[in-house]
Amino acid sequence: MEKEALSLYELNTLVRRGLHSILPDEYWIQAELSDVRSNYSGHCYMEFVQKDPKSNALIAKARGVIWSNVFMRLRPYFEQETGQAFVSGIKVMVKVTVDFHELYGFSLTVVDIDPAYTIGDLARRRKEILKRLDDEGILTMNKELEMPVPLQRIAVISSATAAGYGDFCNQLHSNKFGFVFYTKLFPAVMQGDKVEETIISSLEKIYSEYENWDVVVIIRGGGATSDLSGFDTYNLAAHCAQFPLPIITGIGHERDDTVIDIVSHTRVKTPTAAAEYIIANMLEAAGRLEDLSGRLFSEIPLLLNAEKERLDKLVSRIPLVVQSRLQRENMRCERMSSRMLMAWQKRYLNEHHRLDVFPRLLKFSRSQVEKESHKIELVEKILKSASPEHILKRGYSITLINGKAVRDASMLKPGDEVETQLSVGKFKSVVK
Image (cartoon, rainbow, N blue to C red; front, side):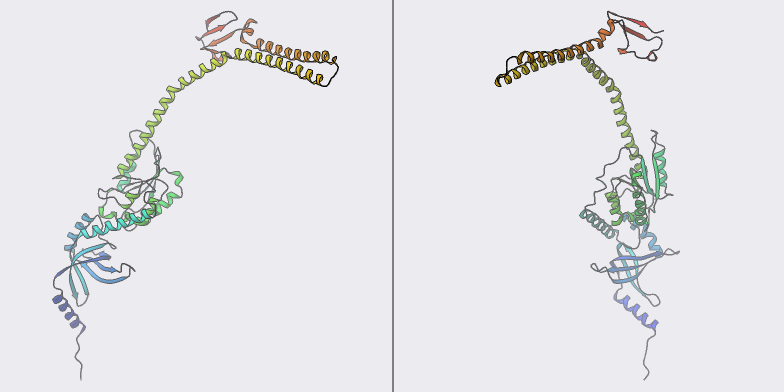
C-alpha cells in the first residue's frame, strides 16, 4: 500500500498556518542581541539569544529582522534614549510578531522597542562594574593621586583625526598667557568595539615612559552619544583606576558619566574644557611663583640688614670678650699655682721631709707662674698690636664706601663718595 506523504513545502505551509493561528498577536520579549547587521536596503538582521545566568550557555536562539521602514524610526529613537548603539551584546525588550516562511523558516519581526529596559540593564551593568572595582579596592585610586603643579607634559589619548583633538591642541598651544606645553598623541579608536583594546594599548605605552609625563588626557570630540558604550567596560576602567598618573577625561557628552569618567582623577565635559583646566592649573602655578618671587625680593633686604646688625654687635663685643677671657685665664693660673703650692706643702709635711725643700719648691712654682704670666702678656701685646686702633695709630687709615671697607680700587668708580677713618677723626672725599 502506497503511503501518503506531504512535500516539505506543504509541511512548512502547515507550520506557518499553525503558528499564525496559535500566535496571531504581537508579543513583548526580552533577549540579548547577537550578530546585528544591516544591508544596503536598510533592513536590519540579527539573532536574539538567551543565556543561562549561571553557566552563560545558550538556551534559546531565534532569527530576527527589522524592516527598513521600521528600523529608520526605531534605531535613532533607541540610541537617543539610551545613549547606546544598537549593536550586539546588549539586552533589549522588543515587540515582535512570530513568523514562519516556507523557505527561510522561523523568525521574529520587530515592530517596536522599549529603551527603558535597556537603560535599566546598562545601569545595572555599570553598577556591577563599579561595585567590583570598589570591592577590589581600586575604585578611587586614580582620584587619590596628587595632581602635579604645573601640568606641562601631557600624554593625549585620542583619535588623530578627531576634531576634538585639534580643538584641544589649538586651545592649549595658543593660550593667551604664552604658557608652553609639551604634548604627544597616543592614538586610539574612540568609538565602536575597538575602544577598550586601543585605549588600554595606549595606556601601556604611556606607562612604559610614564616618568616623562605629568598627566594623561583621554578626549573624544563630537560623535554620537550611542558610541560611548566602549567606555563602560571593566577592563578599561580597571586600567584607568590603577594608572600611576592622574587621568583627565573629556569625552564630549552631557549625559551620565561613563565608568572611566567615574574612576578618572578629573572629568570635564569636552576636549576644550580639558585644555582650559590645564591652562588654569598652569596659571595657578605662575601666580604662586610670582607671589614667592615678590616675597623673596621684599624679605631679603630685611634679612641682610638684620644679619648686618647682628654682625656689628658681635664685632663690637670682641675686645670685651678678649679682655674678659684674659682675666679669666689669669685668675685660673693664679688658682692653679696656689693649689699646686698647697698640694706640695701638704705632701712633704706628711712625709716628714726636710723643710729646706720648700724654698726650692716655692722657687720652682713661682718660676712656672712667671712663665705663664709672660705668655699671657705676649698674647695681650699681639692682640693690641692687631687691633684697628693700634694700626691707625701707626699711620694707616681705613677707606669705607657705604659702610664697607675698600680692599680693591676696582670697587670704586668716578663720583663715588668715600669716607677715610684715621687714628684721630675721619674725612670724606669724592673719587675722580
